[in-house]
Image (cartoon, rainbow over all chains, first blue to last red; front, side, top):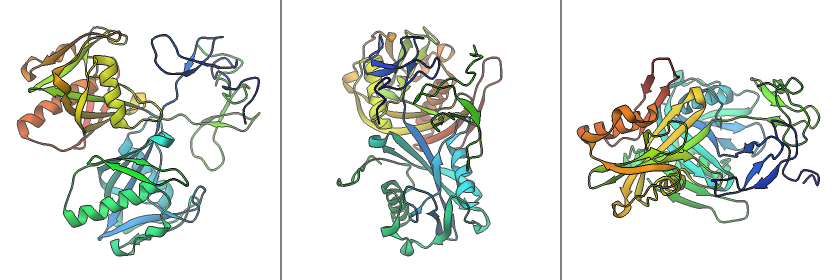
Length: 195
Length: 195
């Protein structure tokens, strides 16, 4: 719903309506405020999360919130200001699965340009094999590779990370992964793997 | 400078003053608008850039803008909405050094939690060895490892990436790097290397 008085919203610094235009020295349209001179840049957001293993099984969480309520996912969520990607991944594991991580290593970087998100995923050991559902999560479970519920996964990026996790075991490849994922409801999924 | 009427700024959706508080189901303070119910999340920003090589030499740019005007840096800048980290790194190489990249691979992820930035750096070949200064850049130059101007580098993250680049050559290590960099003017630099 577009506000006809302020179709580009309001300046968060002075409260006057924004306009849209290309600032001097820039090459793309930005939200700008002519009243106070602010330029409001919009940038991609990072999602940080992890693949946690315990005795060869992988931890998945059944989502207790929308979107994709009831589908299985890896513990992951938006990175917060003031933390590192690795600390954020550990925080999300605790918040979504009451899980403590050990020996977290970089697993993969997955770009989702259509929704301006970057997933930075880690893998490590689930401390003492302990996890527990909470407010955001209906259930947590450790899955053997052959039991991963491929048809009930929440997001294409989760499917891709788990696919690479399984390949990695088979092929003994330990390279950090980089892939671009183009998904949109009703359109064919496109994944470009760089490594 | 804090505005006494709106110390937390204004809602970008409706233009009313924001307040600060912890939303239901959340665990940390956010900027919120009681007039329209919006919650304004603030998240880290990604900087994407690259180490470009040509015949064993590495491309550096002499900054033509503040901060650190006149110091040497790797081509890098804020990631834009709608692009991948890799495409963003290639775009920055062109914008800052008129450089075209070939065969870009993930080089390292550097967290800067104190300023809520994540550097995602790539390395590859500088196409035809060609680069040229432009509005943002005073000079571009290809440096042999032994000639890198260590005392004239713009930022600790540039120093760290180039240090690892040099080690990588010496030790033949081709692992993607992950490090946390804690720097603040007047305080000792602290770097935690995870890989």
